[in-house]
Image 1 (tube, one colour):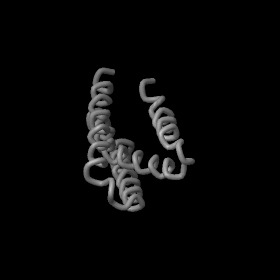
Image 2 (image 1 turned 90 degrees about the vertical axis):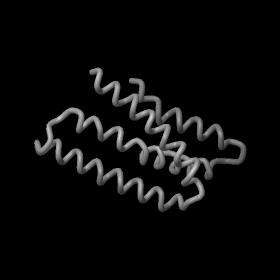
Image 3 (image 1 turned 135 degrees about the vertical axis):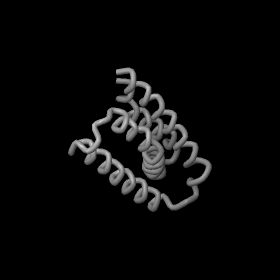
Image 4 (image 1 turned 60 degrees about the horizontal axis):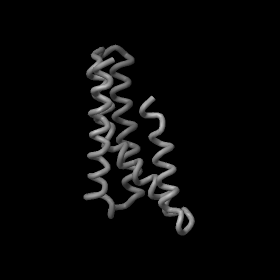
Length: 112
């Protein structure tokens, strides 16, 4: 489906923007608060879109596909903070290896 692929590309660009935003603006803020805020925001926004789609309020493919684009920025922030927490707990000298392994495992299924 062409529309799905185009929204996936746009979503990946939004994910990159989310990573940049965390790097520039939110890296020195509270990681716990960022995890809580992004998780709650993701759950509420996803519940909103799914509820409207499942209960036949809005039956437009672009409405459903637009959800993935909107969720990418908070998902990027959530991903970065959660992996940084694990990297902080890694042994000395293995931080880069652990981060690379986690990033690879998390994004391995995206091309499929």
